[in-house]
Amino acid sequence: MTESITVTDNRTGEVHEIPINNGGIAAKEFQKAVPGVWFFDPGFMATAAAESAITYLDGDAGILRYRGYPIEQLAEKSTYLEVAYLLNYGELPTAEQFDVWKREVTYHTFIHENVRKRFLEGFNYDAHPMGMLVSAVAALSTYYKDAKLLSDPEVLHKQVVRLIAKMPTLAAAAHRFSVGMPFVYPDNGLDYTQNFLSMMWKVAEPRYEANPILARALDVLFILHADHEQNCGTTAMRTVGSSHGDPYVATAAATAALYGPRHGGANEAVLKMLAKIGSYENIPAYIESVKQGKVMLEGFGHRVYKNYDPRAKIIKETADSVFSVTGRNPLLDIALKLEEIALKDDYFVSRRLYPNVDFYSGMIYQAMGFPMEMFTVLFAIPRTSGWLAHFQELLDQDLKITRPRQLYIGSDARDYVPMGQR
Figure 1 (cartoon, helix red, strand yellow):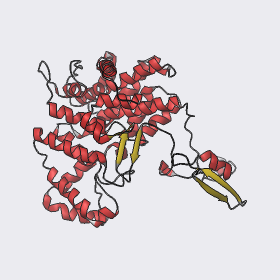
Figure 2 (cartoon, rainbow, N blue to C red):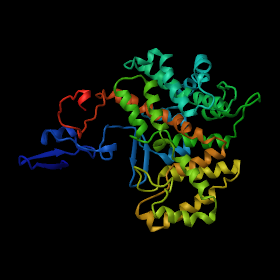
Figure 3 (cartoon, helix red, strand yellow):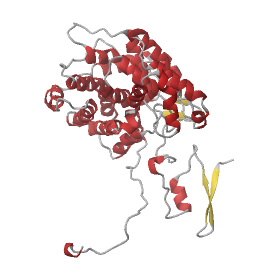
């Protein structure tokens, strides 16, 4: 039996049956049934703007899968570079494919000297690393002019490799500049996250040897942040991509969206909340303030998840491994108690406010030595692979340029009034 809905236009009495496909109805079919009427959906709360085979997310059940693979399995058994390949090319790579992929990414980590000397070093001494990253990614468009040849698969593949490879280099360079330290070149003998940690922290040693537990923890965090369906940054990427802007300017747009505190600032907000609570004894009073609507319980609840965020479970285990190396974050006890209360208190349970991925990630980054200004940058590095997967998908689908409709609420037609008569 075909699934469908029946729509009656009470203005005319006409009845139309509209099919349901993949859980949605086509807006153009609704337009045929009810001409001249638009869906009004601020923030796209209930509107699907794309068909995608990349990420499956069931917020009610707490399920997240990349290309069908459960996030739990990928976080346990895979690596970020393998997941980046999966997202962009649809399948987990064979050993031979992965060797080629890893070598390509590794040997594209260097950035043009002019990007560093004339561009990054031209920022003010106190520039925010995220602002520098947004600008630097956009600037790459001027260095790789072939990137505009979107119909050539080999050329497009090269841009995907370049962006995934160069994001950690640009990110580390932005941090080093912001703290007055000299630029560190990539070390092609290191793995992806080890190389990034080297570019971040190397001082005078011949070679920076990252702690393998910390490098693996960062790799897991990168996997968890690689994609998350049609979020704000991905929507920005797809919007610019629909105009056939090249991958660099589209990635810069997505990064700019992530720069906004409503999108990429949640883990920083969690740390500030925990610091504000200050001690174990202040938790009951803070919980009461949350219930009274005076303050927010940061790191709980999610736009999509109405169950426990599956990434939060993984990240909590990752935190234990990190703290075994760095020492226990003093804010952890406060966080654990907040989580315990929220999972039992009817106020939070009835509102389905469960910990999300941001609740523990900030503490991990802080324990590893990253300043808060870098938290959103650390989000952008892995999310680049997801953004690029969506960019390639919309090209394959030959989607129309994004152009939402609006409901006009302004003035009716009126005549111009000369300035002296206003």
